[in-house]
Structure formats: C-alpha cells, structure tokens
Length: 160
Image (spheres, rainbow, N blue to C red):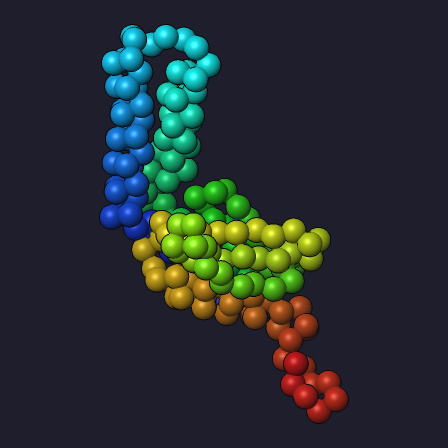
C-alpha cells in the first residue's frame, strides 16, 4: 500500500493559535495590572505554564503547518503522528479502537499495544474527518496483519 498522509487543518490550527496566544497575552496583562510582576510562585506560574503550552503548540503544530508538513503519516510498517511526536509500529499493536472523549467533546483513536500500554492520537488537528482517519488506520493495520500471516488464513473452516 502507498504511504497515506493527512495534512493539518489550517482553520483549526489558526483558531487554536489565536486562543493560545490570547490566553498567554491575557495572563501577562493580568500580571502587569496586578502589580507589575510580583515574583511569587503563583504569579510566575500563571505566566510560565500557558507560555510553555503555547511554545509546545508553536513547535509541534504551528511551524509544521506553515512548512506544509503532514500531521499524520501511515505506511505499511508504522503510523507517525507529528502533533505529539508518536510512532506506533503495527507489529506492537494488539487492537485499535475509536473512543469518545466527553471532556473535550471529540473522539480519539486508541492503540492497545501488546505490552498492555495504550497510545492515543487526537485527530482534531487533521484536515480529514475522524472516521476517514480511523478507517485508513484500520486498513493499514489489517494489511500489516495479513503480511505477517496473522490474518486471512483458513482455520477450522473459518476465515480468520
């Protein structure tokens, strides 16, 4: 199968950028109004924590979007999710499921690995529909199982 790539959704990335930028700016302005940066732990953390998330967002999402990099790349061997810098090898996957996350009212794709760990990817920054991404991942996983001889053979007159 050819390599399948999913691009970042420019609209979602720009909206997130504006929200993050607004949050960091708001935190800094509040600190300035409260007393020109009193350097107690609470005051510093109100600025540092949002700034750290904003910096991570710039490095992991915004710059790759501007450089037209792909957010998700799927090939016969693995899946690479640039947003969280996660690589999942098909040979390590036990099963894949799409789940609902009620806290942010969206879905995520969970990979149950053979070592009983779980890896999640959130397709919200992708330009594709969540179902389209999930189906593509399932297809590549199925092809991987067939290539490894774990799927598509006859056992006790039932196709596995």
